[in-house]
Image (cartoon, rainbow, N blue to C red; front, top):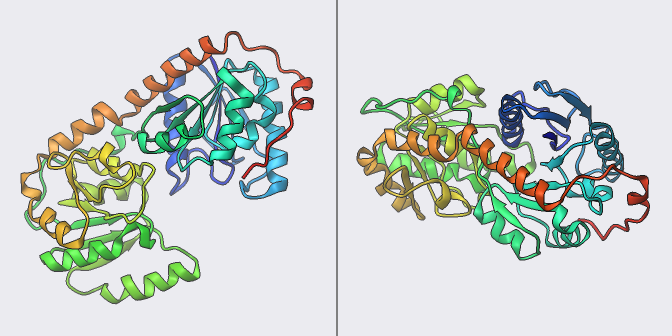
Amino acid sequence: MNILLTADPELPVPPTLYGGIERIIDLLIEGLRQRGHRVGLVAHRDSTCAVDAFYPWPGLSSASASDTLRNTAALWQAAQQFQPDVLHSFSRLQYLLPLLPTALPKVMSYQRQPTERTVRWAAKLAGRSLTFTGCSEHICRQGRAAGGQWHPIHNCVQLEKFTFQPRVAEDAPLVFLSRLDPIKGAHNAIAAAQHTNRRLLIAGNQVESPEGRAYWESQIAPHLGKDGIEYVGPVDDRQKNELLGQAAAMVVPIEWDEPFGIVFAEALACGTPVISTPRGSLPEIVRPGVDGFLVNPVDEVVVAIQQLPAINRRHCRQRVESHFSAEAVVSQYEKLYQVQCRAGATAIPLSANAIANTRPPSWE
C-alpha cells in the first residue's frame, strides 16, 4: 500500500527530546516500511525519519489561522503527488477538509479529547471513507458521542530502547517522570515519598508560564535537597532508560483524565511498576496489583508504595510486549488500513472540484 501519514507541525519526527506522538509516528513508519509498504510523511521540516516521500509543512503552528490555511493546501498537494491508498492523519482534522468528500480512504487519529462539532461534520462529509482512532478507549468513548466509526489503538514503545530490570536494590528510589504541571501530580508524589521515607527522583521539564513557575516555586522547589527529594531535570532516551530501570516504582499520581501517557508504558517496559490514579486511560494500561496500583488520595499512594514488593517486575515487561510494543500496534494499524481501503473502495484520483464543492463548518 501507499500510506501517507501526517504529524502536527510543531515538532519533527522523531522529536529531539519530548514529543510522544512524534515517536509513535516514527515507529509506525519504520514498522510499515519493514512490511513492504510505501510511506510518505507530511511533518515539520526538520523531520529525519526515513520515508519514501517527505512533504514539509509550510506553517509551524496548529493554532495559527494562516498556518492552518497553508497547511491544508499543502496536504492537498501532497496527496495529489503521492496518490496514497490511505491517508492517516495524526495532525489537525481541519487539514483534511478538502479531502473529506473524496473517496480516498482516510484515518484520523486522536491523542486528545475530540471536538464534537468538527468530528460530527467530518463524519457527515466523509461518510465511510473516514474512520477515527483514539489512543485509548477513554478517548474513543468521547468521540463516539459525535458520530463516526471509532477504534481504540494504544500508543507503543520501542522495546529495544528500554532495558528490562528484573530486580532493583532494596533502597531503590521512587521516580516521578513527567511534565512539572499540577495535573501530573508531582506534589502528590513528593508527599507520598515523605510519608514513606523513600527517596524520590523528579525528572521532567518545567512549565514556562506564570502558573507553571508559581507551581514550581511553591510546591516543588521548597522540598528539593531535603528528605531524599531531588530534581534531575529533563532526560533523553538514554537517561530515561537508566532512571526508570533503577526505580522501585514510577509514581505519577495524575489529577486529570490522561488520554494515554506513553511514559507509563515506558516504565513498565523497564519492569518498573506504576503508581497512579484511576483516571482517563490508566485503567487500560495498569492492572492493579499486577503492574502497579491505581489509587486516589495521597494516603492510598503511601499504602501502594508499601505493597510494591508484591509486584513481579517481569509481568510489567510482558504487559508491554503483548499490548504496547511497536510490533503489536503496527499490526493493528495495518489491519485497519486494509479494512478502510475495502470500505472506501478504490481511491479515486484527486480532483480540484472536490475543494470547490466543500463548504467548511465552524471549525474549532
